[in-house]
Length: 285
Image 1 (cartoon, one colour):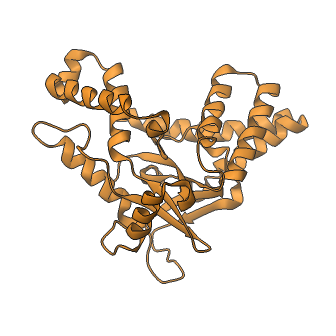
Image 2 (spheres, one colour; image 1 turned 120 degrees about the vertical axis):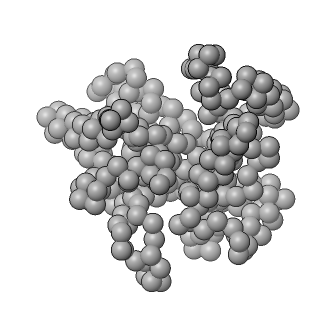
């Protein structure tokens, strides 16, 4: 069973990478032993579990992952590196900053925690700001509302148990949205304008701004993907089929823009209540 987490990913074209990285990723794409899409999340999760079950546990891998999620569109290869070490460092820093020392010792020995922090500090000192940019964002137990904004309801791709692709291979049960970076940025900018003008709530505005700024850091011809990941295990097929959060949020924004406040409120409430009920499962007995 995968962790109850969803992912927002950016896939950059090979042109976004250095010449040596282009050669490396092109060779990686042709490799027969790399993790395939259907099993990539399981492979990534398995690596993390093995590190944390070790004695002592290892919060971050010693080397950066050589793996990536790949997409190919009209012969153009798009790459989303796993960045397992960087993402582990960032997650461990957040965890360490919000966990009392005595409780921290129950998870990771102090010596290991300090060594992990020192390794990350050394990496930051010898790297520029772009080295700290991650192509993948994760969210456990729910999907932030701001993540739905870059997409359109027609970009929805749902796969249920037993569904098959055209090639006849069974895929993992999932719900995914994929769009171009141009569309993602344009929708985020429009949403930000509407929210600033009609809502003005600081927390909502900050969340949308954060996603919009993050998207601006990547190549303009990238692809953006929202992957429900392990969150689908919290939803049965009927609930998953009925989930139209992207379309509902888009309708809410259009309602705000056109002055149809009742429509906007109704659509927004549907999204909020749906994800609140799912997020509450985290504390369910």
